[in-house]
Length: 75
Image (tube, rainbow, N blue to C red; front, side, top):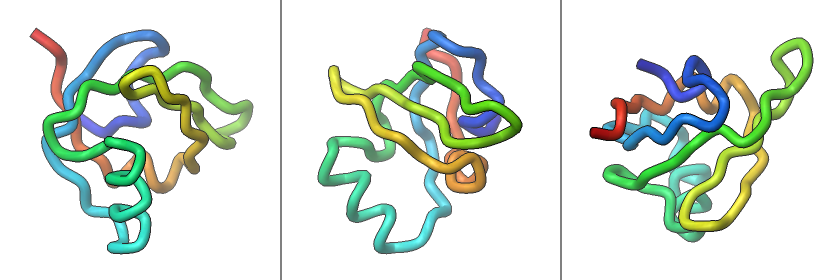
C-alpha cells in the first residue's frame, strides 16, 4: 500500500521508495529509508502537505511524494 493511504497514527514499515534521487537522499539524511518505521502524524486539508514521523523526527511531505513510497503494516 502507499504511505498516503495509511490512517493517522498507525505505524508502518517502508518496503520501497520510487521517489527522485534528490528526495531519496534528503529522506535518508533524516533516517527514512527502506526498513524504517514511520507513521502519519497529520494529514493536510484537501490533499495538502502531510507530516510523517520517524525515530522522533517530524517531516512535512507532499502527498504526491508519499504516493511513491510503498509500506506494509508493522507486525
